[in-house]
Length: 342
Ligand SMILES: [Zn+2]
Ligand SMILES: [Zn+2]
Image (cartoon, rainbow, N blue to C red):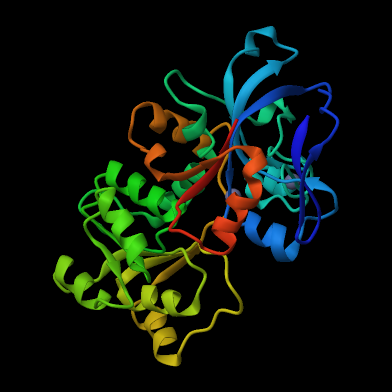
């Protein structure tokens, strides 16, 4: 089969590799759609994977073509890409994202930018009727966004500020809208992202470089401040703004992967104390028997609480990988989700 195999930093090859064999407990998936995650860019161009070569790709959906349980054959599924150790304390609590010793499709072991992938049956998230492979390939970002949204604690009538208009930020905004959050303020530092968010119906999208974000928050909350701010960029400046714009007793959710060391001016740090803010981290998503962000995400795709297809700005076939990666790496165009469709 053909696959995108990473042989070293900057050395991604579209090449023939052996088709994976299904082991006991696994199903063979024919990959139908796989997104390029923001994290795949440093993976390919600067940081690499844990070993080489590795087939990358961890946001995907496909059709089950071989399984122990014949009832599964022909079904569509997305796949929780994390393979927990199963023995640590986090695993015992079904908090797999906190597992200390996990494996991962598409970074620690081969992933889905290939025609086929054998995956653990217990990692399948079966698709309900009417959910397309393309939207299902966004189950991972949708689950990550839901996980973050749950940590925000906001609900009907509240104000949520989301710093960062990428795919995750926009999906958090969709979860918030579905939950009846009154004011959803989306913040970016470029006009094209703001325009994209507005086109999706988020009228409170703002370019913080050009417009006064503080004034907007003051206006829509009548001076109270945002109930929760979600930092989704991993930059110190936006983290500081989130802390400044949260209401007294409010919350700041740290979601963005840090670009480097994170630091705060003294006055901003004081605001955490004086306003008695709650700072909370969010990581990955839940895939347990009780709390399962994935099942909720595919359900929301089916009942249209989420509109993920609008977020797919670019589609490519696997052999067009150079163009697809360059688009994101060199920011050749405004993009939200870039996806390989097979
Ligand atoms: Zn990802
Ligand atoms: Zn574990």
